[in-house]
Amino acid sequence: MKRILLPLSIIAAFVLAACGPSMAAPAPYGKYGAGGGAAPDVYIMPEAPAAPAMEQAADSLRASSVDAAAVERVVLKTADVSIVVDDVEARLQDIDAMAKEMGGFVVSSNLYQTMTMNYVEVPEASIVVRVPEERLDEALARIEADTVEVQNETRSGQDVTSTYVDLQSRLKNLEAAEVQLQEIMENATETEDVINVFNQLTSYREQIEVVKGQISYYDEAAALSSISVRIIAQETAQPLKIGSWTPKGAYLEAIRDLTQFLRGFVDFMIRFVIYLLPALILISIPFVLAFLALRAIVRRLRRPRSTATETPKKTASR
View 1 (cartoon, one colour):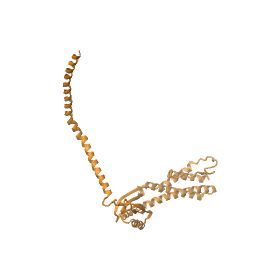
View 2 (cartoon, rainbow, N blue to C red):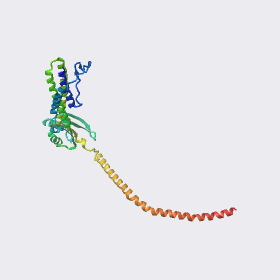
View 3 (cartoon, rainbow, N blue to C red):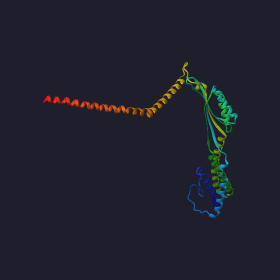
View 4 (tube, helix red, strand yellow):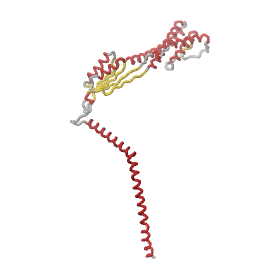
């Protein structure tokens, strides 16, 4: 039994080290079952036979790793478009048919009613489709063709190459460990050893399926780009009109006039602070000095008259 557990523990240790903390380690199995029972006697593994096995396992893991430089860039591309059309329902059906024609599919589609500024009920729709990545430009051109207006178009991409390479490396390491565990299971003779190896194989196969699912998702997301389209009725985009009066036009004119006033006011304040205010201060200095001098002269002239009038009053009182 110890001959079976020794290579089994070596394989598990190297696979866990290669896959990193994201891969959950299986519960240890021993003579007394999975994670329970009394502790067995301490067994010291012989160093001489373990070293060649460890080197062989490490070489196998290094050989199974994926070179990031050899993998093409994996980019998830998306686009958001808002268009104004005459017939919302017809354009919704056209986009649906276009996606299927290009080999893609419709993720979601929604047709609903909305109100214009004139309180008229009109249709509006939103649709999300996936088309082949190499035909993304063609799909956008067909969506925006024969429209009243294209309000906005936004493209974005998410580079997931590093995550994709990491998943492929984990898958290679898990599959290599699975092969070695199968070989150990074929050579096992005792029932308890077979059960322990089988439990290890079950855990690794579950992780392999999870990693394969993540890789499949990235493959599909990179091969098929996502396009979100908002389809707006032409009536919604038209300005509100009351007779010959257009409130939207008056609103825009008011905003323009306010902007011009604020710009002129700011220009005036800058000229006033930098040019007019210092000039006024310099011009007023001589006038202020002349006023102060004149006031001082007037005060001096008034003092003798006040003393002359007070002297006779004092004599008469005596």
